[in-house]
Length: 125
Ligand code: FES
Image (cartoon, rainbow, N blue to C red; front, side):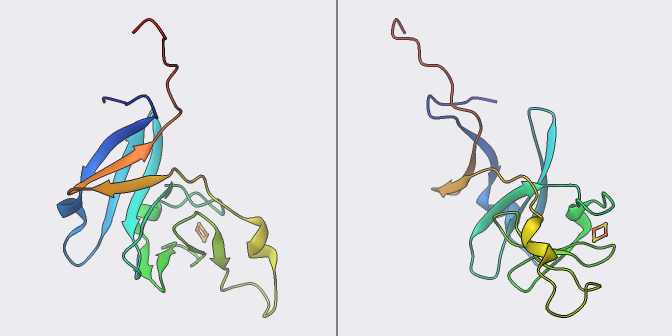
């Protein structure tokens, strides 16, 4: 995939997230992510494997402004932050310590870009 000097590379078209379920698997440099659009219309590109038992978040439920794991219901927002663990006692703050990897994304003219590691810019280029 082409990467510009700031590290942005195209990963999808905006229309890929049209429809009832705005969830799409994405591979970047051999790592697996899931791209989704939340209730606010914002994009999230987060690690695809749930940190609990490794369930594939591509099969998660898109709800409550994030993505809910299909196995035990841990809920993640677009930054990859876990915001809810249904089986934990009420008032538990354990979820604040749990976060999956997140890659910055932006949407321009119907295309979605992810920011991978910035490339070295050769002054002689
Ligand atoms: S595997 Fe995701 S909440 Fe358990």
